Each structure stands twice: as structure tokens, then as C-alpha cells.
Amino acid sequence: MSIWNYFWFDRQDPLPMAVCRICVGVLLLAMFLALTPNWDRFYAADGMLQLDDAQLYAGQYVDWYSLLHWTEGVVPVRAWWYVGIAASVGLILGWQTRIMTVALFALMTSLINRNSWIVNGEDLVLRMILFHGMFSPWGMRLSIDARRRKDQARPLPLVWAWRAMQINFLLIYAISLPYKFAQEPAWWTGDAMHWTIASDMWWEKGRMPWITLACDGWIRRAMTWGTVIVEGLAPFLVWFRLTRVPMALSIMALHVGIAFCIPGVTLFTLSMVAGAALFLPAEFYQCCAARAPK
Amino acid sequence: MTHPKTIPPADTERLPSRGWRVVLSLFILLNIATVQYMNLPRDLTAKKQAEWTSKWDPMMKYRLSVVNWRWQQYAHLAGLDNVWQMFGKQSYFNWRYDIRGVYGSGEAARTVLLPLPGQSERTLAQRYLVDFRERKFELNIYRSDFARKAYMRYLARQHPVHEGLPLTEIRWKVVFQNILPPKEAVKQQKLVSDEWHEIDYGRYNPTQEVPR
Image 1 (cartoon, rainbow over the protein chains, first blue to last red):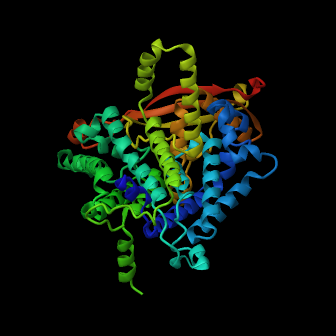
Image 2: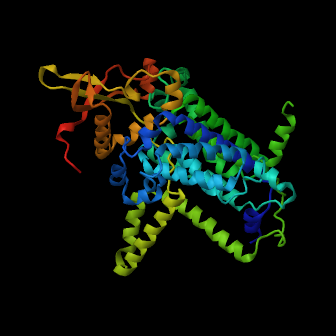
């Protein structure tokens, strides 16, 4: 029981959560800005997926969960874009953090349910983080809220929501890796990178083909198996003090590498970097801040 | 997040009340179990469930299905119903859509490539910043006949006329080329075969639209 209490109900400095919050806010802001030209095309009632088509396509219950459905004809669909921008800025600054988090969670859920054709990985990862964020103390550091309330004098917050977010994040690897092995033999043979590099859906055409063609394919094998090793070890090694920082940095490096190589999944893979920020200890960030040029 | 080497005894003054801990623990367990439940292989679990419940009385089966339904609703509402399969299945060919509008009829008919993100000139900014959902969109509607028809209706609304001629038909094709298997690719020092193939993937005639 004491292990359970220690793991879930300890009190710790929420600085890593605050860093994660800022990263999530920046990614959401980038996403809303990138959606600007396509907002009406994706989400308007007469857009690519008409409102009545959306019900037929995804089943009737989805529209219960979408603000865009309930406010159709009352609130212009473009207004939700402004809400998204404002709430993302609020989340970055840590102003009314809890309200901003709830607003963004409701908005993300609404967008996902409004048009499931265009749902990307980042929508799902960011919504998962926002869900746990609604219960977490991630506005207690690096925020306007903290300055206004002088949070430094308050007791440290409970870690349970932070832990839940961490576990949910690690489950992404723990679940996807067996699926990879079960569905795609190329993950065993080390050839998965070949199909990704050759696919113009994910990879930019003609970019760095030597990764798979040179050295008799050993570079792609090393990259494929390297990905498998990082994803396979992450759910275990991030919990030990000795391996936590190198493992979290490895996850970040892996996803930054993917963001660089595969433009179609940049926001998704950077949202995984935001999730990995939860595992770096507060001391790590304080040390980085101390060493940063003034 | 500096952890001591041994687990310290629980500091009861710093802990929430027992009641709160029970509530929070149940909530935590519910969420972790939900994520795992939603990610069970559906075919396997449906088969196993059918085996286990084959001798149950109908009322018990009904109650189980209600619990199952409620649980899925909760997962959907909380956003915990995602199936995590990052790059689980790789594509063995490159493909793109070729969507054209036929304007006018008879000898005056003209076939025009519709100016869509996946089949028109894009600037660097559009390609890297704006089009980040296009490929996933194309992938998602690939398998759904309903989705493609709904999208063609949208295209018909967006591009009803070209140079004074009314839209009479939308023709949708998939154009693809095979990706060479790894050994062959290394041998030939290229990634894809030279041949392109195409298959007819649907037609839509806005003038024959049936009211829904």
C-alpha cells in the first residue's frame, strides 16, 4: 500500500508538467494556425463532410460530443478557431490554466468528432494529454496563475494526474510495438524503414534514398531496430533514476528525427516530444535554465 | 522527481484522505483499464467473449453488452478510445488520387483535373504548413465508398462550372506504382518500379443526385 501511495499520491515539483503544458500549448497554437486556410473546408456544415453526412458516416452518437453540432446556425464555425487560438495562448502563458485546458479538451473532442476523416495522430495524443491535464497541477509553475497566486508558498501538488498522463503516454509504445510486430514482418527483419522511405505518402520523394539503398541496407536496419529498441525499452527504463534522463532524451531524439524526416507527421511526433518532457526531472530543467546564456 | 533509493513510509499528513485516495485510485484504474481494453485486438476478443458467454443466460449477456457499450461511450468521451498502431502497417505501393471533373456534354465536353491540394502545384509553405492533413484524409477515405461519395458531392458544390460549362460528372481514379522490395531495391539502386497503373475508383453525376 505504501508503494501505491508513494507512486500516486506523493507531492512533487510540477515543473516538468509546466514544461509539457507549454509545449502542448505551442503545438496546439501551431496546429490552429496551420488549419487557418482549411478551417471551413474541414469543419463548416457544408464543408467536405456535411453535418448530416458526418452522422451517417461515423454513427449517430458522435454528434452529441461535438460543440460544432450543437452550435450550428448559432455560432459561426470560424468562431471556434478563435477560441482555439485564444485558449492555446492562454495555456502557453498559464492564464486561467484549468479553464483553458477544459476548453481545449472540449474543442479537440468536438473537432475530432465533427470530421473523423482528417484526424491525425497529434489530435489524439494532444487530446489524451489535455484529458489528464484537466486534473493536473500543470498551471502551478511557469504561469501567470502562479505569479498571481504566489504558488511558491503553497504545498507541492499531488502527482496522481501526472503519473496517469505518464502511464498513458507509455502505453502508446507498449501497445503499438506488439501491433507492429504482429502486423508487419518488416519490423522484425529491419526493413520497415525501407517502406517508409520509399513511400511518397510519408517521406519526401527522392530525399536521402541512401538510407535504405547504401551499405546493403544496414543503415535502414539500424534505424528500424533502433526505433524498436527505444520504443520497447521506454516503458520500463524511464522509471529508474539512473536511466530516466537518457531514456527520455532518446525518446525526444527519436521523435525529433522523425519530425525532420517525415513532414506529414511532424505535429504528431512533436506531441510525443511534449509527452516525453514529463519524464525529465525538475532538477534537469533547473540545471538547463541555470546554464542557459543570460 | 528525485526518488529515494527505498520507498519511504507513507506520510499521512501529506496524503489526501483515505476516501479521496480510494476515489482517485478507482478513477486511475478505470482510465488505465480503458486504454488497454480499447486496444485489445477486436477479432480475438469478440471470439473469446462469444466462447465464454455461450452458456450464459440471455439477461446476463444483455447486461454485459450494456456495460461494454457504456464503457466504450466513456472511452470515447474521455478520448481514451484511440487504437495506438504507429506505423504498424506499411504501404507496399505509392498511390495518389486523380480526380477530374467532366464539364459539358457531347462533343463540347471537357475533362479538367480539379485543383485539389494533392494534385495541383503547391508552394513550399502550403506543402509544409497547410497540407499536413491531406495525406491522412486521402488515406481515411480510401476504404470508404460512402466517404468518397460524400466528398464528390462536396467537390460538385465547390466546382460546379468551368469556363461556362456545367459539371456533368466527377471521375475518380487511383494511380499507383509498386515499391520495390528491399533486396531488389538495393540490387537495382532505386526504390520504385517505373510503371504506373490506374484503377477506376468511382464516378459521380450531380445531375442524377437522389435527394437523401
